Amino acid sequence: MTSWNDRRRAFRAVIEGDQCVHPGSVYDPMSARIAQDIGFEVGMFAGSTGSLTVLGAPDLIVMTLTEFAAQCLRINRAAEIPLMVDADQGYGNALSVMRTVQELETAGVSGMSIEDTELPQPYGEAKQRLLSLDEGIGKMKAAMAAKEDPSLVVAGRTSAVAIAGLDEGVKRAKAYEAVGVDILFMVGVKTRAELDAISEATTLPIMLGGATPELTDKAYLANRRVRIALQGHQPIMAAQQAVYATLKALRDGVTPKDLQGLPSKKLVQVATRSDRYDAWTKEFLGG
Image (cartoon, rainbow, N blue to C red; front, side):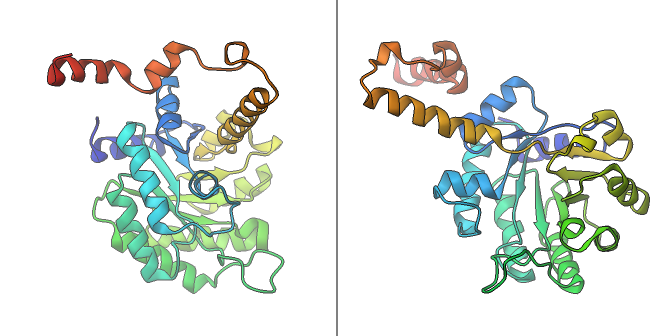
């Protein structure tokens, strides 16, 4: 197993490089191992997939920091792929952000995003709202002050472009860069014109959330300093469908030997690292 520092340095090499990568969306130890074995440079564990995995709940910010950090540790303990995580709004105010950074750093994450959206959604509000810029800056400052490992990456995340327009998005990107965050995580950017404006106004690496037809060319994205571009979180959705289809088939009378879509024995052996356990069994149990 690589140390937390080794994988954090590998993650920094990605964001400080000159290429754009798509992270593998992971949600548990086995999915992270599979992403690692396939060759993804980075794993991405989102708040939404955390809610689905831990609670079976939608992304309404009902999962606690303790639950999220525990799942991060499970993933990092089992796999060696650098893990970027979505720490939402930091589970409270700026002091809560400090606690969030401490817990997730201890859990071995390589990077985390802190966002400036008002979460959970306030009573009577139908649409997302941004925190004030001053509060957003306070949270970013708190995140940077709380980390102990300088190789840990903190991303300043904002949905300002989608919520309040391009000018506000540029304003917040520049403000969070001035605070000292390591990368800008821009959500809701849909056009090349928007990305061009953000790239021209800032100097930090950029992470994009949510792909649009205009923003899929990796060479163009790399030229605009986009180092990580999310593609969504399809793997956990595919897993839900697979579980449903398998259980439904069994309930409907299909025999286990006739089930479709099951993994090969080899894939299970590799994903569970059974060769390691076989060796340990022989060495320590005399088997």
